[in-house]
Image (cartoon, rainbow, N blue to C red):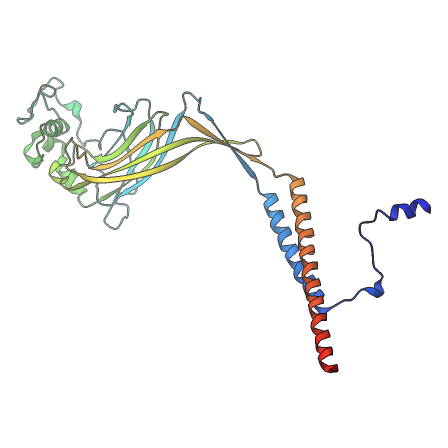
Length: 340
């Protein structure tokens, strides 16, 4: 019995007799409100505990031989597919090598509806295939460039060759019907069929993981007389390689990026004003971000719950005491006023 009595002296929670406890309506209201707040904050803490915690890490990207996959879905409401050319270039301005792509061009009418049921696959740097068979012509022929011959281009055996020769001369290619090569390939008919149409380009590119660009621009089939007062849109993209590690061990390799847009008027000729079109220039960061998912600490959850319960009831006790003593003081003043 003596040892139990000594143990009672360490009790930090002494109890009062039931006869000395006073229960009030104000205390009951404070208890109910504080209880609801505790429940609300408990579920909030539980929801936070059940979410995953993501830890970011930053380190030098040492990966080699990886590819950068670029998903595309772009609509040009006023640019026919026959005019549209798509190219991918590296940082040196040369065409990207070993580029895997799966790009399609879908013809659209003025309302944005599909003209053809199926889209046509697009080859990088090329325009739509011609309807005639070039093998039916003499391979050793040398046809006229119609006055646009140069040291690099002495023979123009196709409509593309004539248009390229005109472009290098800076001449407007206005009358394709007078060019034998274009008449043979049905150039004017194809251009007329897609007049006032739009084009949707979608699919993906897989390029080498080096700085470069890809662009949508009026191809050689787009007459220079059409590009006056056209716009050049440039998008400068900063790409940050990212690895996301999930809790179950799954690894997701992706990229984060930021974009800066710039636009200006282009005259359609090489020079300070540039060429009309949409140019996306991307640059890869030498640093890689690693994001790792982790479960939140259970002890942290318990600590939060205890802090919620203890803090709410401490504040509630202070408020209840303030209400109780204020009510008693007011009641005493009223009683004193009656007696006097």
